[in-house]
Length: 425
Ligand code: SF4
Image 1 (cartoon, rainbow, N blue to C red):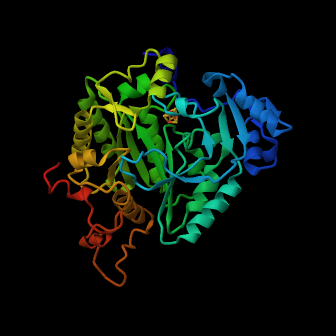
Image 2: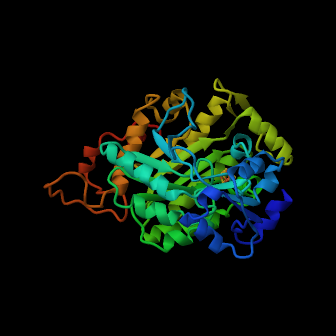
Image 3: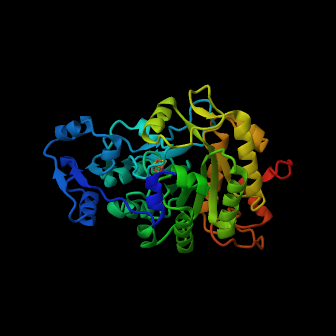
């Protein structure tokens, strides 16, 4: 067991505090800059006079460990909204969109892709949030028939810096009430104070990546513990936010079956399926570059052990039958609690989908449509099932799922809900 994690295990999760802040001259007057600086009295602040100084900082030989202690407030140079880059052409794409409000993360998961992906080691926040909201408003308005599932957790933890930046205070009200967009704030923290300090809305799903105690204590050095995450999720659910959970990365080790089954049970022991917008499963995967970084930064990590092979898209992952077995077992345990909760696989092939769900989505299209249907259920008012003028005598669900009557069929066939009938679970 690594010493750093032992230290963090003994107390509640520590919120990020930078040792120094650099301010790009282009963002000195931005509201998020001013807000952030008010949260960190006493921390040294360097106001750059030119963007060349920023470029020099990025080009310095600062290590990743040191860079994470320094926060750069700067401007996003281009479009914020992008299609998710996670899936290569051979993986089933779910039509997810990402917004990069920040890059890098201080939580130090051994398996974190950012260690091998980012081009500088600093914690960087793009504070021109009004530009971001203008861009999103234009995109959502131009295509009112489209459904946009948007996450901010691709290149940073969605809430890791929120106590400093307060960006959730801009994003959540913006998404509230939108008919065609849902925000996902994905985190491994319990940093939800801002979320609880404003009205919740159905368009803002708060999600947690969770793992077994074995993996979390060994491979996730500075994240909140599972109980801390659940406590934060409970408070968000009680406040009115839909929840989601990501079982990711699934890691194979001696006692994985008992531990992951207990993890699934612990989710459903604490939360009603009606409160869960979706669940995802993702087996451990990484590139060669990341493997080398893990060996160098975390020499005692055991994450690289196991039957890991190189896939056709150069990603290392468990041998396919192992992944299928792990997903199928997880799905079986989930379905013992809920026959209809949306479950999907992150970055997996059609072949694996077929073996796990007995259903083969197209590479682009089917899974996105299915997820979009789940989003409509999430953001609609509970009584608004789309069957206008029909008194179906429905039972109204508690939070997010719409009615529990046969009329839900209007949303189309839910291939996941068919798992049981097909004998899969
Ligand atoms: S929480 Fe996510 S982004 Fe942060 S270190 Fe862990 S894997 Fe990386």
